Length: 202
Image (cartoon, rainbow, N blue to C red):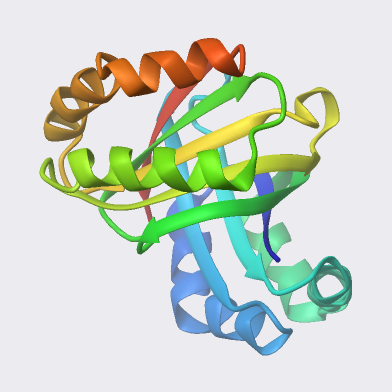
């Protein structure tokens, strides 16, 4: 099982922190046990607009805990946060249930949903169908995740779609949500869409 932790921040001097991230921050995070590291900013998403998200992939929750502790205890990180005016807003842990393609691209769309538990077989079928459609619309990857520790979001699902063209993604998204099999699955598992945010990769 794989996981993704997400640190949500407000950053006063984003260019300062981005420079630090590119110079040594990302490499340092990978040295603590993370298998992947990304940084993004929510541009459209209600009260979440402007939030910077620093995300890390992990092979286990134990590894995530030790890695995040190492980051928190690193004096260079503490100093860099102060210099850039980084103010953490919260941290969440997501379980990666399904993944297709790669979590790369210029942008991503994140849809938060709730519903009854979805069997892995149904999840896989849905992802195969949806990625098969969206890969024709500049989509580079998709992740279906469930919130393990995320405050009031705990237990909800997050569908993240990475793309190089948001316009193309929206065209493909309409096709996905009008697909009869998709509509039947949403009804079967009482899937309710609560919100969508759109972010740029940094």
